Length: 328
Ligand code: ADP
Ligand code: NA
Image (cartoon, rainbow, N blue to C red; front, side, top):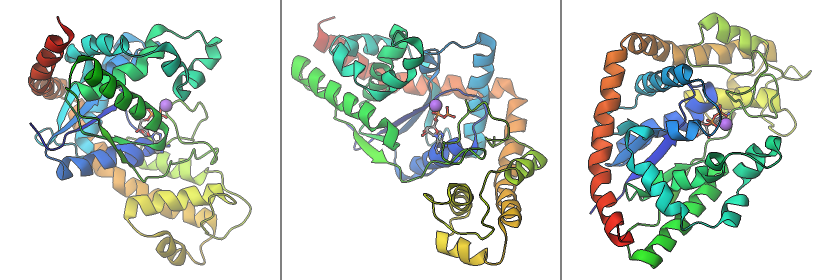
């Protein structure tokens, strides 16, 4: 029995960007010190719901591993593992899928959004993706899941599936609770009303944590703001400069008031270089560490293998219990 256990996943998109860092990874680093049992998974099974080049995927898994370690994920505190190395995830997905109705999945916004470009005829994998997420969480009897606003409906599905399983087969899963993250979305530097995203095709819109100081300075210099030169915080009226203020506060821990006060008299051009400097300073040691880790693929693989072993150890008794309850 355990008091609480956290599960969270991140897709192997390679080197994370500033939005991933502030929106997910920084939380992960904090949570591993606040909870005694924590699992972080690099969810490669999820990533193949859209086509992936195999050698790129392999490299992206290693790059994400290196990045998480460099950002401060400690494999002694958190079990860091590659999802597909624990085969029980897929078996449990099947069992849970048999308890989940098609309409329940069809109404989830991720399906509506991601399959819309395909005339609502995306793959079975894309459609059942949220069931895989539920299996990820329940396989470890996780009690808490850090989620952003956009993932709440998926956690609600997980809660429903846990209850359904418990009702049908006998009590097994705790109903996991959300740990709602307060962090705001970092916006694209080229279009400050859209979120910063890996998949944004616009040049200079996304800051990666391994960008050189020159690249970071350039991206902020080119950041879209408006014709007012003052630094104020007004996300509705002035999304561009407000995004810079938000990044500044998030990375320094300063309040909006402090940042605005400290920036009095600066025009937005000068202010961009202030924020760029903050980002450069934050990411310099991380970039350094990522480069070191990337050069040692054997070490990264060892971390992933050890993580998978630990995850399997936790999954094994739950897996056994599930099979017995189902009648296998
Ligand atoms: P991307 O949009 O780059 O593909 P994902 O959707 O894979 O990123 O998200 C990975 C994690 O990073 C999630 O926890 C997500 O909430 C967080 N995240 C992604 N983009 C941002 C952003 N612009 N601001 C804050 N958090 C973000
Ligand atoms: Na995304």
